[in-house]
Length: 212
Image (cartoon, rainbow, N blue to C red; front, top):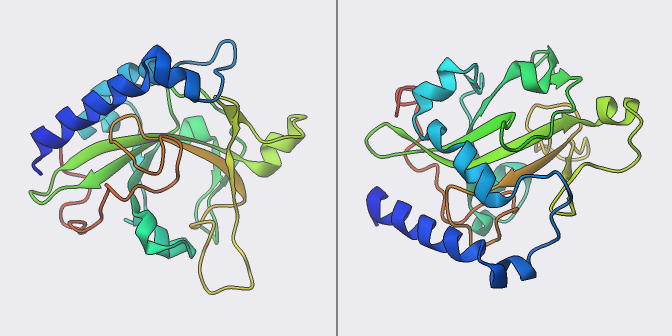
């Protein structure tokens, strides 16, 4: 399936997702939260990674294309992709030494802290999802006793399990995050961490960061 066909399919499936019938099957949207359609529209410009770079997003310093097996999940769950993030929105205070840390509590999906791209065979990058991430210590220091939520769904808690050789926190200090697959159809669900329809097959250091 080529990119044009895949984008058309994603658009069609997404349109079905936000119809009243489908919306009734989704978790409830809290007052003041942006809808999936609003998030998709607000982040459409980031399909061009050059726009993301111009607005302050930076590429993952580790040049990692995340796959489910990297954190001990079944490989069948698929991939995330390459993460581009806004240091100011995450309020980064420490580089990976040994872990990225910060004090950000930003949760606005129309202005997400993280964009996720899939490497393409021609060396470009395709926007597939957006993400918000808040550091657990900072979130609790702000007086929160429960994880942040979106559509009533609590963010996933991500932290390294020291009893394994894997890095379940993927070089980040303990944090909550939520992925939203508004730019790529996801059979696992729009809020799943990984997507079997995403791939890291074409990831390389040469192509990384230069696509559009």
